[in-house]
Length: 374
Image (cartoon, rainbow, N blue to C red; front, side, top):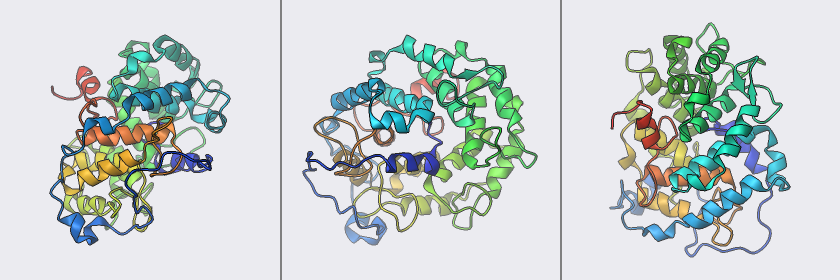
């Protein structure tokens, strides 16, 4: 899926087999079993490296290995991961392709082959894209497909009117969005609808004010956001809600408690340097995106220890076959490889293209589409 897949898709990789054979052990052991917030540690709060990763040499990022890992994953249809993720292949393609773009290696992918396959995932009757050929159209995969077309600068291949109409058909009277015809409601789908309509230049296809008002009703006392009104605050849901409200614009309903939310987000950093998705949970590389993207939109990236987070992500790299895992010593996958690289990009890691925190695309792509000023 795209960057909106949060907790539901996050469960997919948890059933993938963990490494049971020997592999490269990180040079510096990480105490990733301790979920205590870094703010509770005097050494963390006294860090002088907040807001930058200049002290970490670019060579620590194993870019070539990661590119090779993604290319292998895209072509290995016999792997167990391929079977387990068949239903979300379009989003898997988005993860891998965007990671390659950030690494500066997108031209190594089979552009024409990807676009031809993507066309076969389109449901012309519904106006949306399924997770793979023959699968039902869903907002999650429709956004991933549109993001891929944007990456390749082929938005001319998107039937913008039909895609936007598909999103509009899924909006409910309370402003929320279902993901597909079966009716599940989630703020992830609000973000997907707003983002894909913005990318397609068809914001008039949905009720933007009602969408923003629904997201605002999902705000909690702690400043965070849940999947629906009353739902638990979670870093993944916070990203989609904050990004959705930014896309909706300043005139739309909904106010973000920037101070309370910024504090909740920075409290997700634990002593190991990584970030978790909610209190008392272990750190996970993917939250290097979910948390940082929201902090970036709030202009509060300096509220976390960037150097410690970058080291946590880099220690989760597989030094033999490439790829990034959820945490050091675990098995890598494309999902965490993308979000690890995206997190480093948000931190300004040298050698990576910058990623836009709202649209989850390279910043230059967003600028080329006229969605940001240069």
